[in-house]
Amino acid sequence: MASPGQKVVLITGCSSGIGLRMAVILAKDERKPYHVIATMRDLKRKDKLVEAAGDAYGKTLSLAVLDVCSDESVKQCINGIKGRHVDVLINNAGIGLVGPVESISIEEMKKVFETNFFGVIRMIKEVMPDMKKRKGGHIIVVSSVMGLQGVVFNDVYAASKFAMEGFCESLAVQLLKFNVILSLIEPGPVHTEFEAKMIQEVKQKECPGADPETVHYFKNVYLTSSLNIFEILGQTPDDIARCTKKVIEASKPRFRNLTNPLYSPIVALKYADETGGLSVRAFYHMLFNLGPLMHASITTMKCLTCGCLRSRAVSPN
Ligand code: NAD
Image (cartoon, rainbow, N blue to C red; front, side, top):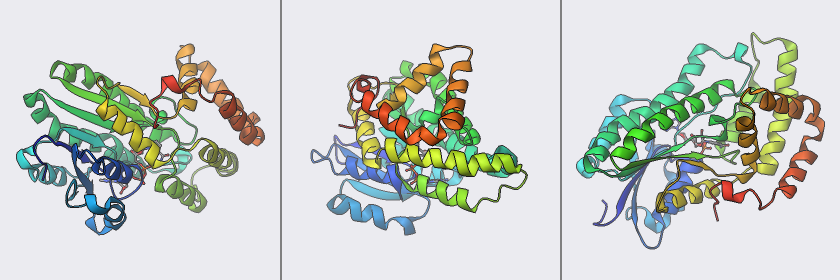
């Protein structure tokens, strides 16, 4: 239970990846400013988190069951918190989906939206009314660079994050009137189970319904580029957790928070040309013409831009 003066932070999807590291880093702050309620669908998956939390487990970190896709589970979890009081809600739980659209069933697509979009809304609807009443609180949504810029073969995942961005952009204005802050965290690639699951999924995918040429582009061109990008530009879950902590502790938290400064030019490209043609063509050339040179060109870009883009993003350090 939170001690007086401690902020109650509830995080979704803490059994792995970014959520796990957020829970640990916040709970292990030596000043003990937070009581973290780390939630997951199945407490049988708690061991990695409990081990990483060490002494903080049972003191500044407690566990609760929560499935963002279930109304009942969300209600039960929030009702179980003393006074239903949550100061900071971190919506982290999410799932990915890659592949040619032709080979993905509508059911699979709905599952992505059910988790990444409706899952977040379900949480916000449960926690926001109390925050509005108290005239205080901070809602954080882990979006993605793909919530700002679509990426080939990530059509549905990007759409779910775009939807979230539109929802948050609209809601943030109203919430400001109630002194409730809404912030988006927008990571680029991060080394987590997300990436491992994606690679595994792609290898196993038969891609029924997609023509051989599309399957070739997906498996041989997209996947190679994607692995290169993860290898060169990937951040760690700790980086994202530290960025998020900075956003929570900022005197004036920003609405948008790119965590990887190397993605600032991609976002700038999009807003530099209102016809949209520039970014579509740039991505086309990068994938289909520069594919074989991808590794070298990203490494060069990383060296050339080192340092000078940091002010546009929230830095983990
Ligand atoms: P991850 O797979 O390690 O973590 C996602 C967590 O969400 C898992 O613990 C999973 O069990 C949980 N989850 C899934 N469905 C859930 C549900 N219905 N209810 C509760 N929990 C559920 O991957 P991650 O990279 O740590 O992903 C965390 C967030 O970061 C996601 O929202 C993802 O979209 C976002 N993100 C990830 C990357 C990346 O490259 N890894 C990049 C940008 C954004």
